Length: 197
Image 1 (cartoon, rainbow, N blue to C red):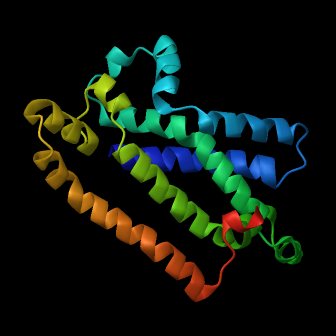
Image 2 (image 1 turned 180 degrees about the vertical axis):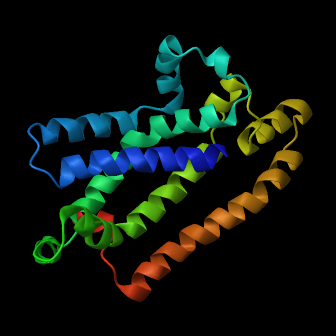
């Protein structure tokens, strides 16, 4: 629940922010992009300290939904940076040609977003990995997650065996997913968001 809500919240905010900074003529786009880069560089626990000053976190005790939304808001700047880079690589001539026959929302849905779908999938996997291995927000809100359980195993047993066996299956699954991504790009030859420099 926490990882899924975090990915949905961050990608939704990142799509909106990335489209504003990469695909519009909005004044101050470079300042908005710089703010997103700065927000992406701030660690989650630092953001949590600032959020705790304004949000009564004790009211959301043991709420996986609140925990997921908070993580999503904290990772929204990272999503904006990644999706902004992805939207800059979208073929503009294809969009202009599609605008001759369709409205702007249909062009966005059928032309722009499909060209950025692998950036969105990669971003979702990255956010799930980051949220799944972090226990700062979950520790404050007292939500039991995988990372919190591994942390508790270390605290209780003080040995490496239990946490290692707990974390090994997730490590193997994530390693496999990360190994499949370059193979998929080589197989289909699609342009990736990081090829723009």
